[in-house]
Length: 240
Image (cartoon, rainbow, N blue to C red; front, side, top):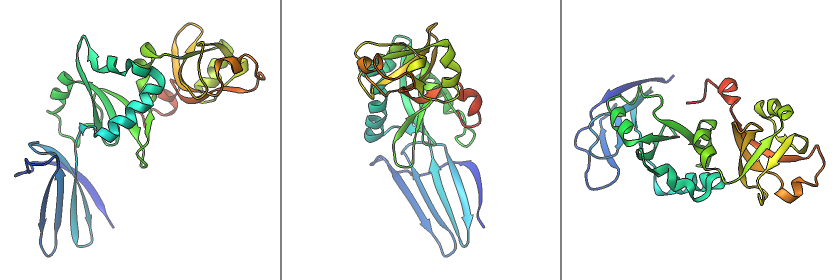
């Protein structure tokens, strides 16, 4: 039987010569393994007690690695293209992305400094959650990123009033529910979905290009559903 609990602790003598330090101490009954970024005075540790051993794993909010950044930016570029740079270079301050519990948060440096005053075991969310990395290291955008995708979206789709409810229940958009689509939208292009009143409803992937959308059967899928604002009700327990 395994029991888990969390605490905040100070990790001494972290290596300053590499990006990740390892402190290993072993005795006949207990094994301690601590991984941490150097020069961080206070971190959160998650302990699992099992038969004959105690393993301590460090969980911290950290910058994304180059590979993680590439994966996330490739996903974002499908929706906003080169406008990604506008998320970083903002006139109201410096913003950055941070990883915490497999989720990527978009946060100002000012708020990031304030967050360091909160112990990591009690930190649930900070800034805006853009999405999460799956166990296979694929990045999945969350609906919480919509407010930052919509202003910079290069390709858009508008749904008819009669099709809004279906979309907000997580369904794909059919040709019969399509109001408008941006010219020259390519097949499998990321699109932001709007109501006819220009209210952002979610985002998805174009199943057909613009020309095909004009010719297909009314019951054909024209936009594959990815996320919608209805998730704030349907998935409120898992959104952070």
